[in-house]
Image (cartoon, rainbow, N blue to C red; front, side, top):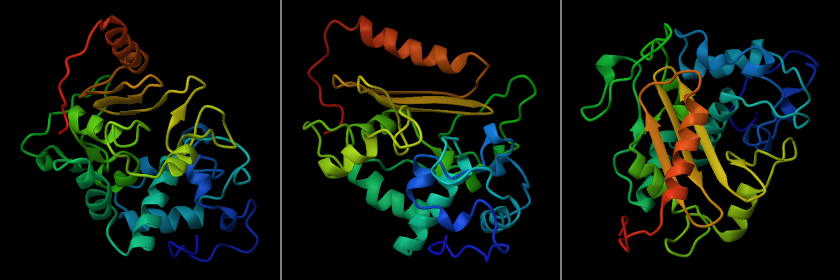
Length: 261
């Protein structure tokens, strides 16, 4: 809290937000600001800037659980981590990620998206809402660190092969750092630090917003894939995951082509 310059909290708030460490929103187990606890700040108060959202949420939305005690996926927690990156690096979050993460992977086209159809990039898809959802009614740019990036599937896989713990491409992090990254967190055996995990071990993450659905996977036997859609419905997440596994299981041979020289 001190690192991101958060406001002074009310006297003796319970649970105490000052007990939150970087580990807690990473795992994620910060103790609040989660949809399954009744309130996701990232989809409220669209007139607030990101700075307003962070400050006012910390002041007005008390934690509901002790930090570290329970798993509750929090978009706002990842938003806070983006602000930690800015405070620690002295640079805007997106500029730091592009320079220190994406460019070493050979990725040049990823960027944080805009909010409206008028903000659409020249080569960006049009997002299609279903069941009354409005893909262009969200504050996407404000979501930067938890789901605001736009990319194509090839560039997502370019990133995956640089964190896959395989020797074919140099990883961005040391082996010991990747081991920590993919180790199950204390609040859930199914979630590590920014990654869903299982005992195989496979590592993955999916994402879902009005007008989009995505999944990125690193398998235990050396496969990486990403699938991105510009719409969603209630059953698309599991179906998209199963589709990619069906493709993987149908492969009998692979061409000897380096897609990421």
